[in-house]
Image (tube, rainbow, N blue to C red; front, side, top):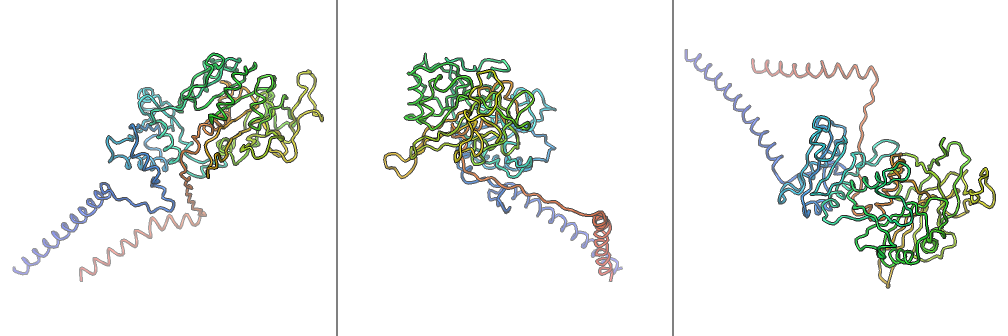
Length: 494
């Protein structure tokens, strides 16, 4: 009887030991998960630190002047953007210990919660909206990636998102003035061919303040002007206006974007001296092209030539899209400009090799290239083509300082209807104009956070190898586990 009691006691003791081990095992992992969630020390062991914010970003977001609300319209069950979700969680973690939590992140499904999406003003899926008081900045998820050959090559989300957070949380908005008074295209015009209402809305969404100014009435350029834009002027600027623009660009290190359609020469617009002072030559011609692949059925030019080193055209290059220009004139660096003037002049966009600038376009005859027309010049960029857009920047050391100081920037397009309501939706048109806006307002270089490569892993198996893998997972691994269990059981029985 004593043997039976001892056997029962040993069995209960063994059962209690197993239960205690299970409880300790569960407690250990529960405490481990609690520490991993609440402990302030976190380590990123990935190769490119893909789940860590840079010290520059941390220093900015932890001291934001106002809290920022980030609304993401990515569905909860969508796992196609793991980099975006990981980055947003890092922003939340970096600021949750700060006062009031400067960054709040919220996911909204625009299909299931349409009313809330409309209230927030974010009705497009796969978008990110940054809201701070009355200010907002909306971007698409694809803007966080570097696109090459229509594939995501690198993730630049931290740079783009941090710059947008700083911009929207800043109480001061950059202001863009569109010039008026010379029959320029208007921001309040909703017409398809001549209206700029779509451009106005797009700039406001990107947190720019947009207004119109007539220098013949104002007689001075406002101090809060971050950028001036003139779209398709038709009449001559007065000498007072010319002097205002010259002083604004040179002495005031101002920024100006000109969209000049053919039909009116630069001298007739009163801009010839200003453009020559900045090393830009605007020809009185119209671009024609004999290549069938370079012209659409309705006569638009198809543009494929860009300077790959310039940030203004990076979005067009990354997305591998073509630009479509209507009536266009040639715009190129002035070959006779003085060297050593501190100007950095780049031809951003070029024609094909079969294009030329027709000078005699007013004669009403069939355009044909001849020696009197505008042709590419040897040694002048763009090579073997005519320029359609030029960027000029004045960067020079002044007063014997050992560094360069901020100078003026000028971008000239040889077309006037690039950003009209009808053309704004064409692939690449708004991208290249927005690139010019970002470059002139210094939005392109606020942060120097490198992009992170996207790691892809692909397993290629033949049908036989896939069958062997299936049998291994279904039979071999469970069989090994069963054999080990039987071995332990047999050992304990003996």
